[in-house]
Length: 195
Image 1 (cartoon, rainbow, N blue to C red):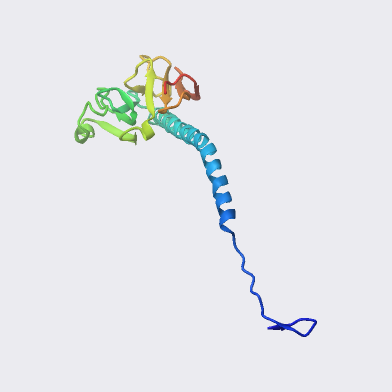
Image 2 (cartoon, rainbow, N blue to C red; image 1 turned 30 degrees about the vertical axis):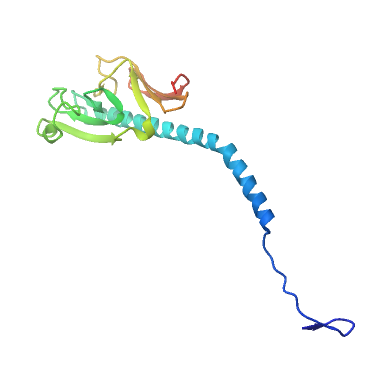
């Protein structure tokens, strides 16, 4: 208790702090509006990041294969083939491998994986995704069932320049990974994906 100027004793009033129910409801309404407005942009951002990540993984594997072909100075070269080689589907991932026999039969799906090393096939790297990350579709133009680098770091003479086309579901934009005859890779935007 306190005594005021007049000598009257007052009880101490404790002040309470916090938000009223009305203030809380106004804040929740504002947050809900912001979430509704921001969700489509966030979905687009995530799709772009997944496409970029997948394109970068492909470029890294292609550059790795090219570098290994030069480093190993193997006349047969280094191959990159889709994991689903039977259906020529790159969306599930790819192997980077060396065929010491130059029989060109080490691609996944062609030789039993247990027999690959016994047949002179050496897997150097694999980038596998059971369903393709978030449904990203990867096709080649022209249709290609393997990439073959020779010891000079260029594409095998039987190959011409080609492109990998990456498209995410429900998106009109994607990525193109272009591989020049020299073996050099580049990435650019693709604007004609079918959602």
